[in-house]
Image (cartoon, rainbow, N blue to C red; front, top):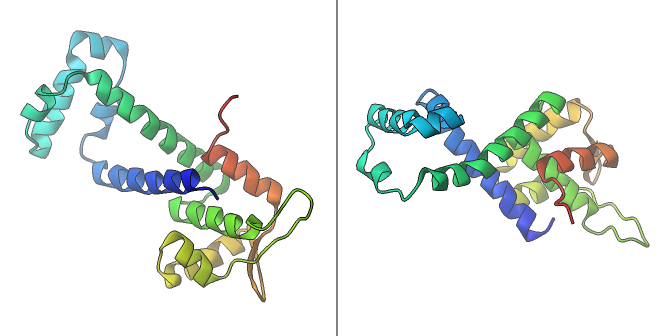
Length: 179
């Protein structure tokens, strides 16, 4: 896994924590991006109203140069959340499961080359260190993922059971950019 992919996973964790903080605190008003609402000023008023409900300083919204900046910042976050929701609907995995699966695959396939396939098992400690998560959390999550058939435990650690399914999940998570 290259550094940019790792930073993408870090971004997902940040988005996940922001999403958790927003639950029940006005996310629908922020997500309303209809042209009619934006053009008539209702969108701006809803942002101000939601900020007032949360007790935020409404002056900070007035100092923004444009709501387009807000929209451009929310666009990649909305895309990331959409990808996470697609993975959850298709596979039933939460964000922790996805990160552990991605890390396990990255460790499994790190030594693979075009001329020589090589798979390295990923143990609980190596995954926990790779994603900087407590070992006990990783161990519990690995058991759940294994029970769903996505990983198989061997004496040396865990291996992805289907490279094709892992790549499919990674394609949803980190789509390839068109050349």
